[in-house]
Length: 172
Image (tube, rainbow, N blue to C red):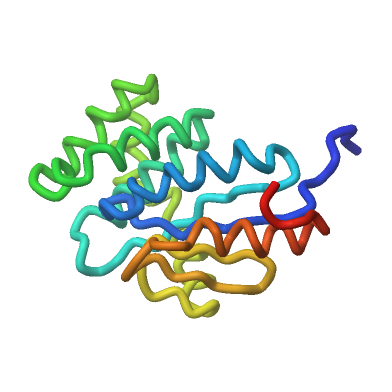
């Protein structure tokens, strides 16, 4: 049993780690964290798109980084290098690991032995079941908000749903 109260609302953010729009979406994630703190649990979920050749490997590498306790740092640093990942591929995964203090040899081994395939596949399958087709996509309070075509007004919509879930007045 824990003394930490559970978050009152949960936001799943479906990302492809080779998606430049997902990098942009991190700003909205940060503002949501600032506004709601511990009342809103934000979970990063994998949704590697078939069109992005290195996204599946990137998702597995991120899972290994989470295992090592540096997942969000890794995810953020990798999203900042989406163009480079597109051009250079998997060597970028190891460079990012070194930059944020993740064991690159373990990432290489994880990509070979497939230890995180099930986690990535499970996220992707759940996303498909929820109707996720592009990234970034947010799911909160049973509502899916697709940012794959446009992120305009998306954070505000997430805030409105979060306020409703928390019973808080809009605009706080």
